[in-house]
Length: 177
Image (cartoon, rainbow, N blue to C red):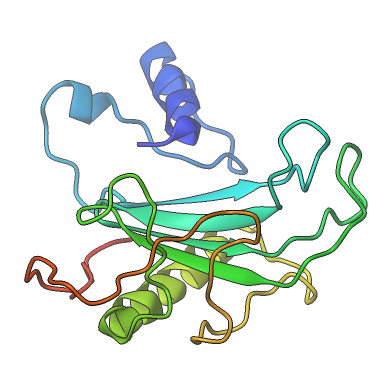
C-alpha cells in the first residue's frame, strides 16, 4: 500500500465515494485479512525537489518492487520554486534489495540484470501513464544501457569485482503491477 491508499481507506470507512480524479485504493479488506485481487506489487514515486540547498538530491522518479528498485535521475528542477537551476545528465540506478538491502551496489549495467531492468522500465512507463505523470520530453528517461547507468557523482558506488555471489535467480517478478 502507498500513501494515496490512505485517503481511499478513510473515505471507505466514512461511507464516502471517492472523487474520480483521486488515485489509490482502499486497503480496508487487507485490514480484515481478506485477499484482494490485483493488489499492486510495485510502487511508483517521484521526488521533485531538485538539488535544493538543504538536501542536494537530484530530481528523480522510480519504481520499487519487493526485490528491486529502479531509479531515473532526470536531474532537472524544471524551474519549480525551491529547486536548483543546475542540470545534470540523466542517470539510472538499479538495486537488488535482497542481495544488497543497503543499496550500496548499483547493478544497472550488469548483464545479469538486463532482463530485470527491461521489465522494470516497462512497468515504470506503464505506471507513469496510469497515474498521469507523463514527463516532458527533456525528462523522459532513455532506455538504460551500460553507458547510461551508473551512480550519481559524489556518491561511492561499490561494484562487484571478482569473488562469488550467492547463486540466486535474477528473473524479475512479472506479476508486479
